[in-house]
Length: 113
Length: 113
Image (cartoon, one colour):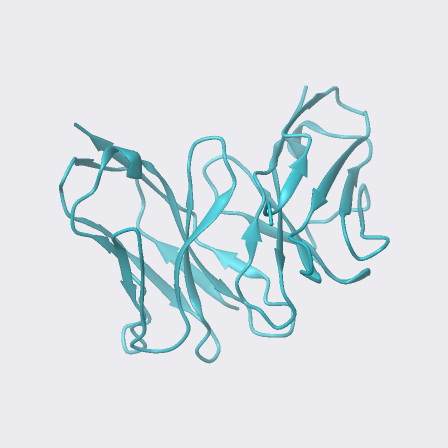
C-alpha cells in the first residue's frame, strides 16, 4: 500500500541555519504530495503541496520539489527561525475515491537562538 | 470562513465512560474525515463522510466507536466504554468535492484515566 517515510527527529538547528527534512514515498501512480506543520498543542496546518512531478510547492520560505525519479519530496528552508519550531508531516492521499491521507511519523524541529 | 472547529478541545474521562466529540467543517465542504493521532506518531485515518453518508471506516474503528454526520454538516464521534488505549488526539478534517487538500481542525485531546 501507499506509505511515507520521513527522517527521524528531533532536528535541532540554530536560528538562520539551513533546514532539510527528508521524505520519500511509495505510491501507485503519481499522487499529490503535502507537507503539514503541527505547532505544540494544535492541529495540523497545510504548509505546502505539489500536484505533479517536478512541481515545487512553497510557502513561508519553505520549499519542496516533487521528484518522481527518487520518489522524494524533501522539505527545505534557507534560514530557519525560532518560530519554525514544530513537528512537520509529509503526507499523500491514498489512491481511490476517498483521498484519505497517509502520513509519515513526523519530524520534530527545534530551533534555538 | 472560520475554518474547521472541534469541541471540546480537551476531555478527561474515567475508563468505562462514554465520550462524544463534535466537528464543524468548513462550510460547503462535503467531505469530512476523522483521524487519530497518538504521541509521537502521524495521524491515522479512522473514517470518512461524503455529505451524510459514511463511506469508509478503518480497521482502527472498533465497535466501540461510532461516527455520524446526520445532515451532512457537523459530525460527531462517540467512543463507548472508553479504555486507556483510547487516549489520543482526535482530529477532524474537511475538503471540497474532488479536492485533495484537507483542512484540519485543532483537535480534541482525550485522556482516559
